[in-house]
Image (cartoon, one colour):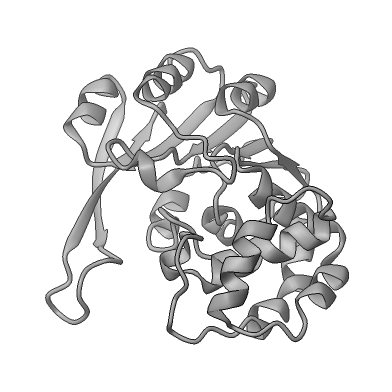
Length: 256
């Protein structure tokens, strides 16, 4: 199934490639460390008895997931009748972080910012018309998929240490090197150069297995040179349409 939102760096185009790299035998624990839009989680098969964990550092994003999981009808009611409006977009951009908002009110505003913004970046109003009702009709389907999924809002180091076992599989999709400014959390937090090294040091010592996706960057190739590194290409979502689409190179890195 598809995700219900877009996201900067989302893995819609690469989800099947990533899943094809999963171990043949399903692990007992599956953890997405940088969840985002969850394209891989929503695409992968739901395995009976498998623990699934979805984590992201963006507290507003995680609040949205939790509201869909536990209160889909209330969230739908909060969104009913809302029009695609530039004025409303910028009102919601300010209101989303105001004190006094309920979790459902905050989730509705954040969902609106994602869906109505240009490139799902939540910064600028997109003039191309977008219908929210089509996505809202899928809330029950999304809730069903999220049933049983543990939803976390932690730093990547905390989440990996917490769930690291020999039977764990981590899918890790960090902000790409040199593009970190595109991945601000709702609180303005940024992934840093130091965080790339911190992630590498952490993965050098995990008990479980991991699949890591990155941009094809010389710094990353050198940093993870001792691992299984393979290059893949996809069409750039920012390039022109037609046969002249640019190819964007990415890396799949594994420790197994």
